[in-house]
Length: 167
Image 1 (cartoon, rainbow, N blue to C red):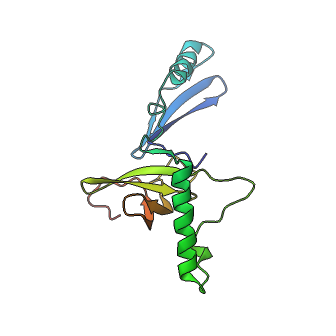
Image 2: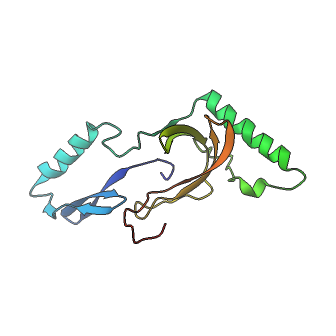
Image 3: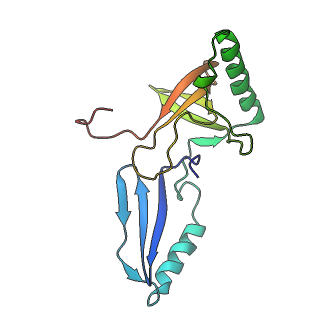
């Protein structure tokens, strides 16, 4: 699901009696050697046994992102309501992501480092989201900064480490 914040993810491919494992992260993909799982079923079994015993962090979940509490959700909702009210009579609803009533999007608290300080930002549905394990995983949010008590804009992406590549 695209709302899961991850540092890496795993996948596998089965073609006939052959399989490969993949580990995806922001730098690309590591691919296992091709193996015949009919002749070597212990490889597949060992992977799934190991995966079942991993921590959330080892499975790739981003430890800086957790579900927001009801109190934190209220801070975000109140700040969003005030933003809309201050903006009247202009219609600024286009500036906020549309919520689908049949499928409520989870609210997260993201710990972000700004210089030598940390900020906890409360975010809901992003304006921009990705569904692929490839690329820079860019998401854009309206966020409530718990430290400054302000509504801010958060661009979350995996930065390139190549100095020759402009962000």
